[in-house]
Image 1 (cartoon, helix red, strand yellow):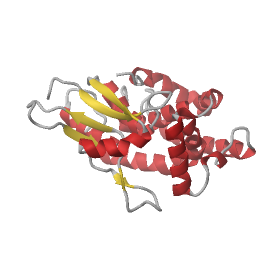
Image 2 (cartoon, rainbow, N blue to C red):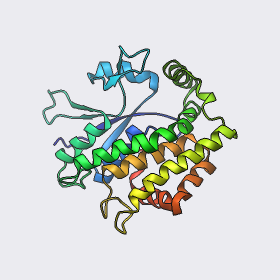
Image 3 (tube, rainbow, N blue to C red):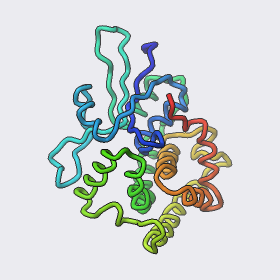
Image 4 (cartoon, rainbow, N blue to C red):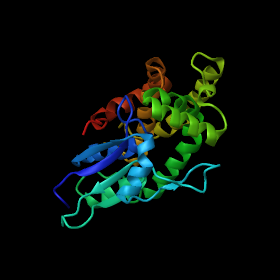
Length: 258
């Protein structure tokens, strides 16, 4: 491995790291103690920058732009030991975590032997049963933590893709938002049922976090940046305070100032 720190490409906001996808990779880097430096990008900078860097798109944009490539963060750049060679680029958070486990075998494993398929199943459950009922409470808060240009881009692109202004999804103080929060609490209750089956440790598989834990923590970290403090505090108290305990246990890995 090169002695130079790798570069981590992340999405900037007025509150630092905000994307749950980039948080997953950042949490992994911090857990493993891997030196890295952050290169911050705005939403509107990502596509031209990644094209110039030589990174690959990770998916297609949502309809009606689904013929277009979508360049996203996170991406990591690993310098070559041979300075004449270009750096290695890894796109997409799950691929980054798998790379880190393989490239740094003496660090804590995100995918302990025999758990990859089970953790993939957990992630699918989380997206369907927890993320989807929660996301309408979170996305409307994103423009508020961006500069004027990127706030407009985010709001306009999501209106185009989803057919409804973000400001109408779950207005603060509305009955609609109250109902959505009750639905979200029930959804997180299903997840609490999964965590209830673990041992006495806060993490799913024992004394240290794994990929599945960081799937959960990354959404909590996103929520912290885009909803009012009192709403986030309420989330942490749900289901006997299990999410508050998970959040506190995650604090050593939540630094975003590298």
